Image 1 (cartoon, one colour):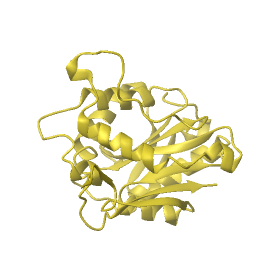
Image 2 (cartoon, rainbow, N blue to C red; image 1 turned 90 degrees about the horizontal axis):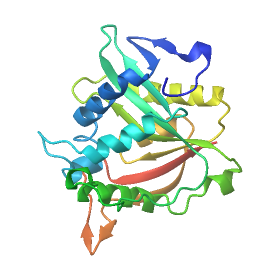
Image 3 (tube, one colour; image 1 turned 120 degrees about the vertical axis):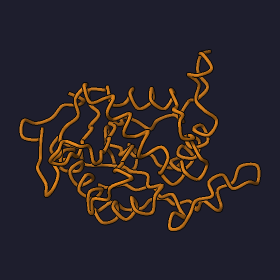
Length: 232
C-alpha cells in the first residue's frame, strides 16, 4: 500500500467511477498518467512548454516516485467501470515548514538533473509559500498537502476533480488530520478548493511574477493567478 488506511477506505464507489488507494504495482501507471495528462496541460507547465512531446523528464519521474513510495503518502485513483484510470490525487504528509526545494544536488549524470524549466516551477512554488508557516499558524505538528490533482485531458468527467479532493479530505480526516494545504496554479483547482472549505492565504498574478524583468509564466485565461489555500 502507498499509505496507511482504514479497513473501509480501500475502495469507495461513486457514480461512474470508483476510488482506490494506489498500490506499489500502480506506480508505473501513475507516472505514465502524469506524463500524459498533467505535465503537458497543467497551466504553468503549458506556459513554458515544460516537456516537448516525445520526451520525458527522469528527474520529474524520480521526484514523484519518491513521494508515492512513502508509506504515509495518500494516493487515490479514480477508475471507471473498465478499470481505466480517470484521475488521481496525491497528498503528502508534511511535518514541519519545509526548506525550499533543492535542485542543485550531488553530481549526477546529465540526464538525471532537474531541467531548467522544472527548476523555474519549483522556485515559483517555494516563493508562493514563503510566508506560510502551518505549524506555527495552525498549531499542528503534521498536516496534509495536496501536491498533485490530475484528471484525464482527453475525457472530461464532470465533478471528478471536486470528488477526488472531497475523498482526500474524508480520508485525511479519518486519519486524524485537521489541516490541509493546497496550491492552485489552475483557475479550476482554485474553484474546487474554495468550494470545499479551503480559504485563500496568498495569491500571485502570473503577469506580475517576473525574473530579471521577464514574465516567467505567460498563461492563458482563465488561469491568471496562482493561489495558496489552507483548510482547517
